[in-house]
Length: 185
Image (tube, rainbow, N blue to C red):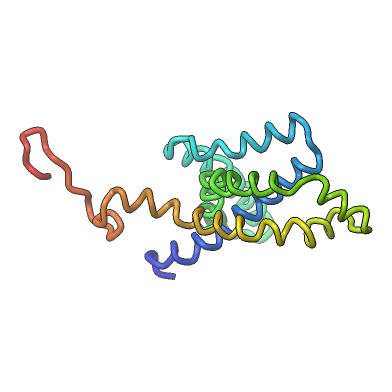
């Protein structure tokens, strides 16, 4: 795949994954309310506040360790080195995207779940629906618009960071800057 087309495939896929993951996390905190699940959800949403360099190190360290373990296992089993299995693929990009933009998805899904009252859950359960059926028949239809909006926003968020730096950066060129003498470098 050409490098310039990667964002056109990866961003929509990663934004859908972020929304699905956010729905699962919020639904889990709804089913098991308490300070631990609520705190875990808040920690997951911190990725947006972390500087990019710190995030890159935090993503590459575990992926590098997993890559090394996979390479060692394949080398022992087959005698050949597979190279970078995760770090050198879009898997790392999607994982980094999840860490960074989970908060964008989560901040839209959580209020969507808050609008669904516990009485709606109780009504579905009194009609014989289990947890999965309640989610499928009650929560999913009520969250569909919120989830679609958050998926679009999560896909657009990285572009906002790129476009504010200028179109030259998107085209792979250098960004012009002013020198101390007042000239353009």
